[in-house]
Amino acid sequence: MNSLQWQDLCSRDDLVPGSGVAVKIGDQAAALYWPDPAKEQLYALCHRDPFSQAEVLAWGILCELEGEWSVAAPLYKQHFRLHDGVCLEQPDVVLPRWPARFNGDRVEVGIE
Image (cartoon, rainbow, N blue to C red):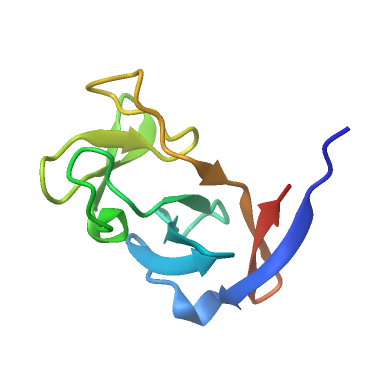
């Protein structure tokens, strides 16, 4: 049975609504997104772009495609869905992801 351990990551004030920020989750570089400041939904994906091998995804452009939030990679412009990390242009490429949530004014990510 898998159980998540919620790890305190940062403050809500450290986030940029409508954008991404680069963070460390354990020893991995991650991108944390809060696409819609009117909602409490957070997303955490791997920061490394699998196509360029550069750690740049936190600086990608957030967009809504087909009713779902995605991030466009800054270098080659592939789109990755925030909720599951799937690349829209090449669905066999999937980014690692973590559950993320607000806990009051703190941001937490789930670690298995």
